[in-house]
Image 1 (cartoon, rainbow, N blue to C red):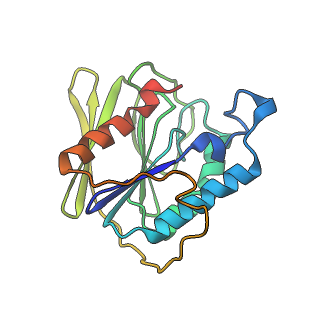
Image 2 (cartoon, rainbow, N blue to C red):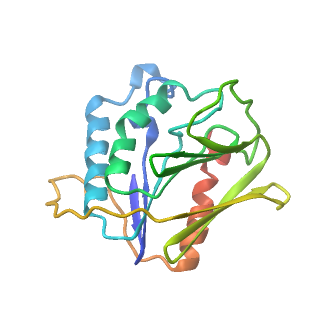
Length: 215
């Protein structure tokens, strides 16, 4: 779990296997403890509450919403446990992978994308997700660019052909005065250093590729 911040942009990376292990953890005899899960949620809440950046992006391997074949139980767990925090603190984008599809969802102002089709493809479940804006079963990737108060997400096939482009404005942020609890962000080893604008774009592209390289 890490936070990396620049002057206007904060990227928070979650370990979603700890947050939703019931269906995703292979070694059932070594499931993460509820204490580990609660500590990460406390850390996440503290980082968001202390954020001063204009843009907040959260990255997790597992999606909150997906029409892919594997994400039933753990997606519901994540939607239950982390989406209210993201809504409360004005998170602008949730980036995920795992399902080998390209997908965009919108729910109460939160944009959520799945970009996991870099290496193989999944089939699509035969139901209509009400939050889904767009989806494509094809090899490809997503690229995000932030300019001023607008974020543009471009979707590309594996040969570089642009499939789609979406833009949205940043969300208003609630600012809090929070005293950091003992062992919260520091305990999780949060790493901070300024990002240049180019590093932010490159970092987002790499984050989107998580679903393509991690299974």
